[in-house]
Length: 232
Length: 232
DNA sequence: AAAATGACTTGATAAATGTCAAATTAAGTG
DNA sequence: CACTTAATTTGACATTTATCAAGTCATTTT
Image 1: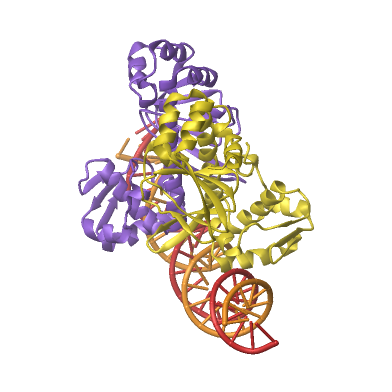
Image 2: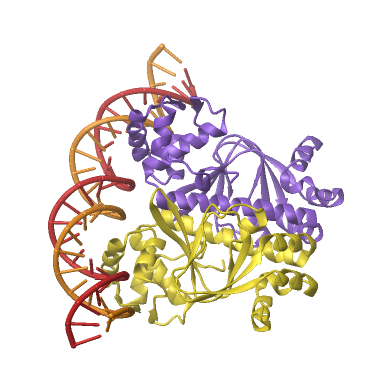
């Protein structure tokens, strides 16, 4: 494990305040791996032997049932995933695959759990992270149940805009068919939803989004921190 | 706070192994309240000043947006709710109301957080509980995105059956319109879905469910622990 | 018990969303 | 660049789900 990665990981919220010795204990069994795009990292149902940290690239979390598949979320640097399964010593509920060339650090779950039991600062940080994840899923669930697909798209665009520079023009960060799946619709439906946003000043060419009439889009989307603010 | 309640609360997984002094510290500021049905306990967006424990009755967690409302879950004795918001010192993401006459214990969030920082056993238990809640929401989200309303109903019946005695006959525990909302459909749609399950041996009269052809229903529902087993 | 209220069901219809196939565009490859 | 492949879009259509209105059923109130 090169020191440069170590420093990066150390700066993550969940590792930031723990004792050096404990951090080293976790890092001892950790290893970095580089993956090309479209590589399966984990499969739902398997036991959660590793906690993962995305250092570069991006990783899709997805779920399957009865031949169907849906994108649950996309994890970007620098963040952890599969924290809950690690802590509970349980099975993965979601599968993961790389979307681009990605660097991922794998931390043995048993080490994470052991240190968790010894280092209160780490435990505190894990809880905060977990609470954050929980709230993110709740928000997502609210969005799915309370909004139509058009409204979900409109709000996604506004969130994406806020996440970047807040300017009228920005880029989509994932493929449209993944976006469709994440928003709980088919690619065809997304394509039509994009056209339906035209009267609200939205133009999407390739991956470039332009929001010409911010107010109109906001009026349609009706964003609320209770669903749309990741920090709320 | 009567001792009888205290003993009940003490036996909850999240309080079970903590130090007596810390448990007392939390109980000192706690109080029990009895509510009639249909009383609003908390409103989404408010700051999470209390963690709640349902001692008797049942509490609906629901969310609203743009004039719409959806049932997120129903909490039954003895369990906590609004743990994540308490830990994060954040705002409630969901509202809560009693469905029946209910007894609820309210623990000041600041006390919970203080003890959390001092008592490692408690912290450990909180994390486990939170991870459990997280996984429950993920399962729910998977179900919403991967299954049709008919499949959701079929699986709900099987889960409900497993939760009770596993026998062919059992009772629905909530109103049908709440069930519909929880499953992400309208009451009318639920009513029709129930009829559509007839060929699979399902009869529902009032709140009584009969599953005459278990195998047929299972074949339709295709339950998986990754979505349907609360303990998985 | 009669009346009133609310839950549930049913039918008719509309809207939203999904499916399939084909056309188009974009991206990657030799 | 020409070729191949994959992603996206479009059109036609099917299915699912929601909406509205009316009716039925059950429960509570008086």
